[in-house]
Length: 287
Length: 240
Image (cartoon, rainbow over all chains, first blue to last red):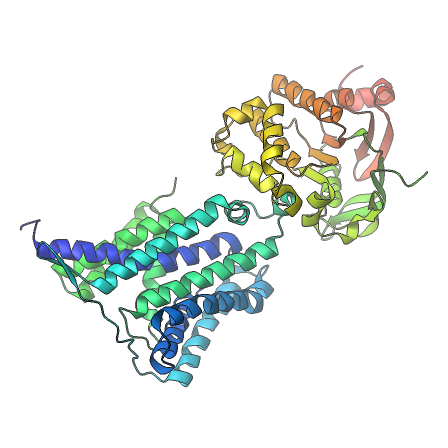
């Protein structure tokens, strides 16, 4: 076997590009979980709603693509806040199983709602960028652009968490929520901010997925489970762990697909996940 | 009595669910005063501080800060009013650096504009913190963590500082340093309320103290009087 096989290198690069897009919902889920301590089981369905928003504005209303993207993010931020206020906040002190059932219920509501409004038809954005060729290796222009946008989003999030007062409070509250009022921090407000950011990350992920994936009411199933798996693998609530695990999973799926078929690649990924759960049950990067 | 006290509690009853921890506690702190609350484990000392800083609402009783009714103020607005609370076990954010911990302490709107000035003041007060500003707080020694926790509380420029067991878990020499520090903070005009089990040490720092026993004030008086009291000497100071 030639390790300089251009197809293998292509698979490797595609895996990294794929990881970049996985990274956004992983960061969003981890952020919300770390701060609010509730798992948004319907996260992939929020992304699905965002994909429909972009598709509707671009393909039906004829808006320019950048404007559809620009509207999708704040819409999803509002959706995240609504989810928190209407579903999560009333259950903050409830047993975790009730929280999971409630956000899981939202998943079915969103799927059902999307089916009612848009039917089960697959909708495509119909946008494609020409591939680039670098030494016999072909890189999809859309995937590369999505990857760069995802990295920019992740970097902005990092800067926010690292250098602002609210961001520092978000990192602090993830460890000790009870002491926060003594610092002058209103946890309820931080929950709202985290939910808004979690929602916007779903919005950004929606924009970047829609350029490479058709949208339909059940599209969440194609990346939702893998997103949760990556979160658990990186250590639930661990932003950096999740971010790195996203790339690892992207590469495993892509290179697995190179040796086997696409279906087998997910089997490899889940096998790897199960083994890792035995070896490092608290996450790949747990100290 | 006139209404000029910095902090005035009366008839405070509080607890957790069915468990009652405080049975009608009255306490007064005058401006510029340092007051101690001493007593055995489980006497309700920490509960008392939690009530004052709004983490726990009293079931009955009044709680006044100057002319404000604190029972009506959400806990997170107290730093804005000039009340800082260094909680039991310090409760630093171990995964944040020293400077980031100070930054969280300066979260209140009015404190943000003053961040650099106050941080430099904290570093003047604790040169050790200036050296360790980029170190993770969780990797420091207990004494250093206590300094950092007090520094974090000072970031909101408090008028009233509440300290919960500042000596807990520290070596005797470090305990000495922490109490020296409290003395220095007092000289800057802060009003201080300290909850302590280390009775002998705290009576040397405060002007007056209250002895709390199973949720009731069992005795109160000037530090000198209390340390001379034969009953107190036997039960708390281990002296004869």
